[in-house]
Image (cartoon, rainbow, N blue to C red):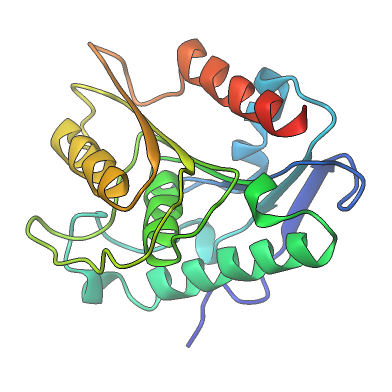
Length: 211
């Protein structure tokens, strides 16, 4: 069973294959691709293809990202397969993987992180706004993949009720061990949102890939 297979993918910005950079944007729980695409206006980078897949029933998996992984299947595996197929689609259009950014917010950031860890390679970047790797404390992970210097960003509040700062820190350390160039920012008192500093970091990443 693959609940997210065949769900729509929204595309905005430059047509796929006509831009040097593609950003795959992963929405959060009880949301849809149109919600994560709201960030496109804030990113203000028009020479980019933005692709936003939809989760079935507006959620990638049913429970907390720190629940037992089996309890959130088949959603997690299906979501990872969707992201893998999108990366392959972008590569087939002539954009190399090292110019593909995988970006997510909240539940989407968790899925993006888990995808990147499980399929580690040299991406253009991985951006996790308020999210981290999936699984309960003590989850054993395969760290054999290598990011080969991929820029990876983790940003979150220190009082986020959905995402403990400890998991964000743990996820940043995991990616660093796997060879990513990690930026981690924990913002005091911030709500469950994407702030301007995080947007500025993502803008800088996109600019570095498009130059």
